Image (cartoon, rainbow over all chains, first blue to last red; front, side, top):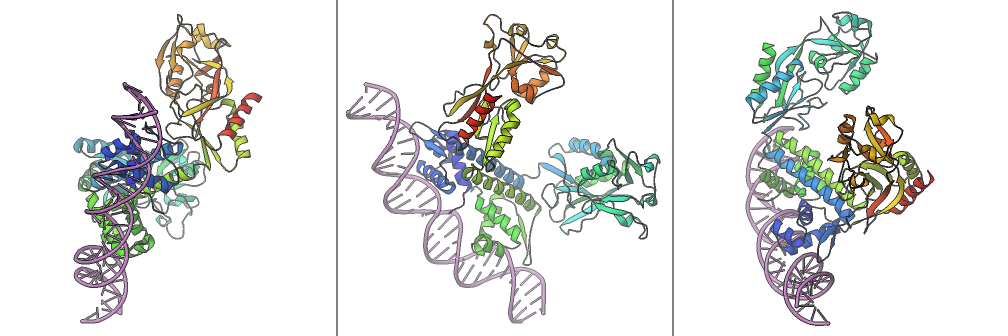
Amino acid sequence: MHDIELRQLRCLVAIVDEGTFTDAAIALGVSQAAVSRTLAALERALGVRLLRRTSREVTPTAAGVRVVAQARRVLADVSDLVREATSGHTRLRVGYAWSALGRHTVAFQRRWSAAHHDTDLHLVRVNSPSAGLAEGACDLAVVRRPLDDRRFETAIVGLERRLCALAADDPLARRRSLRLADLADRVLLVDRRTGTASPDLWPADARPATEDIHDVDDWLTLIAAGRGVGVTAESTAYQYPRPGIGYRPVRDAEPVAVRLAWWRDDPHPAFQAVLELLTELYRTG
Amino acid sequence: MHDIELRQLRCLVAIVDEGTFTDAAIALGVSQAAVSRTLAALERALGVRLLRRTSREVTPTAAGVRVVAQARRVLADVSDLVREATSGHTRLRVGYAWSALGRHTVAFQRRWSAAHHDTDLHLVRVNSPSAGLAEGACDLAVVRRPLDDRRFETAIVGLERRLCALAADDPLARRRSLRLADLADRVLLVDRRTGTASPDLWPADARPATEDIHDVDDWLTLIAAGRGVGVTAESTAYQYPRPGIGYRPVRDAEPVAVRLAWWRDDPHPAFQAVLELLTELYRTG
DNA sequence: GTCGGTCTATACGCTCGGCGTATGCACGAC
DNA sequence: GTCGTGCATACGCCGAGCGTATAGACCGAC
């Protein structure tokens, strides 16, 4: 039993598009016999008749219509793949795990598209330690901790204050700012894979209890419900304002470094430009 | 220049999954040499190096990661295609263009899953004349006009009243019911491809002006804004209640037939059962 | 009905793409 | 150095897939 092949799918959609085997053969640049055999092989492999042939016209069966629709999807994905492999450089995807660039986000996008209107910029959220770099979902990533994966390298582009996220009706939310010690008796909601908070911000003998979460939406929901508190970077407050949640500076927590991450061995061609632009944005404002 | 083939993508993901060319060869049931050549051909076809080989390990390049991710998508689509072709009958998708079965929808789903728990039922909205039948998006369709496409056949399963849809602040909305003549000076919003209203409900000398729309959401938005009125089947009111819109019966408009449509030459195996169930639902209430 | 045109299916022979075996080469362990 | 491991390449073989040619089905014209 042979696996099906793209050649067969290309043949199928060509027949449906052209209307006859003969015209499909011309479109594909092969003989009519080849088209006939190729489609027969596909039908045999799938165990279903896909096209109803008459000497007048050829029309898909019900199964054929479904398969053709799916085949088009496959072929579209394949051409995406080719574009992904070859071009890849007319587009720049910057990944981030929780929050992107906070108040610099808009300026970043605007100044980028002004200076590099040839490669368009996309910001994508991917909840993974490398913010999508390892998954191929982006070309560069904004992260807030060094990556231990040796395939990647990071550089600090700026610093951010740490804020505490509290339920709006939490007594602490009435204060203008807090200290780490104020949170020691709370439940700290942390994302161990991507987050910026960790219990070792506190002295070893006064750490809050922690609970693991894996998504910024869970985190927000639980905090709003008073089920715990969070400690995060300033840009989170910018990117996820919520009615039920208040953000307050934590005075004695060290600032968190904002890093750009890239593939050590083949950085995206635009990487240097992004690094410089981000560094400048964080320096000047 | 050769097109890329699935064999090459299968090879690529096998290498990445297994970690070495040799193990991939075993997993694929071919020789190591074949794997090496096949991947080289893929890289040549794409013009990009996908894997970095050392004698110790093989790791994807940045381009490789992107391509692998896309390749997995392609292969998943292909196995969907195979399932689509072969099974096809463990699942029943019923399409509808605007509104489905109105107040019978819930009963239909409940009674179906009670009697046929082997094939699970999906209702899908597709705005096309055949409600997705011609596009392969569904196996059976609920429509409200005969289909002129000879590939399909339809049967009436019941009748529905026609309602007029008005902006809530329209003077006519204060009435309990209307006549067609009340609407003659309004703009009638019609969907020529799938809708149930058409100017020939009116006598030839007293027809309202019409405007074409192509989606139920547009239709609702325009009506709520007072830009026109709609005439539709009763189930639309059930399925799309909107704060700004009121539905009122049109006393002198003929009821509209609700039809089940199927592929004439290869009806879905469950078609007879659906036809009977729907007919009963409409007959009994 | 017959004839001719059109379209798909099948037969036959050939060619070349892809395979396996064998071997070379690079790299790391010891 | 020697050995082990793993990818790349050379060589010969085989069959999948191709084109040509032809059969068969269908339809419209006459």
